[in-house]
Image (cartoon, rainbow, N blue to C red; front, side):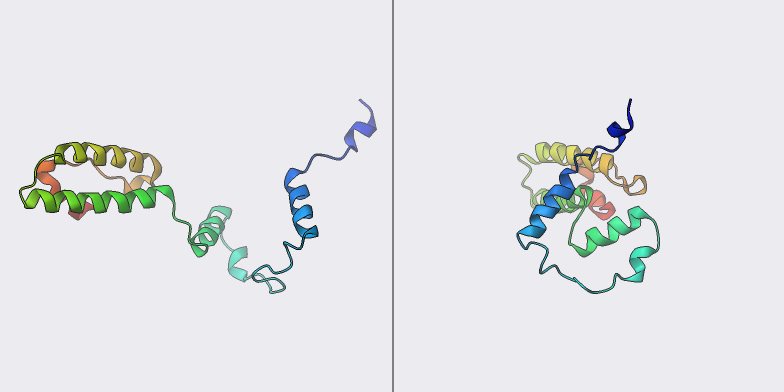
Length: 128
């Protein structure tokens, strides 16, 4: 192997995209351009930085969206069950339990929840 093989330019796809974007003026009016970066972005670890930036941008993790969907679905099922509308509720509970399993796979371990039963739907709501 010769020294020239080490000096060959690498294929930098992201760099090429950014250069092309800059040429077309895409980098001219970026929010916060020219302002110093906050000191808080230099403290903590990389994951904490990602979480902060994602939260500031309005990003919600998939498991958090599932949590809200499950809670809304449980409330609706409980209301119908309390009103005596029992048709189709067992099927909906089965579907909610499938979502709970997805949620448990994605959420932090301390936040995992158990599945629910139609007969104990009211107590299940208090856990969500």
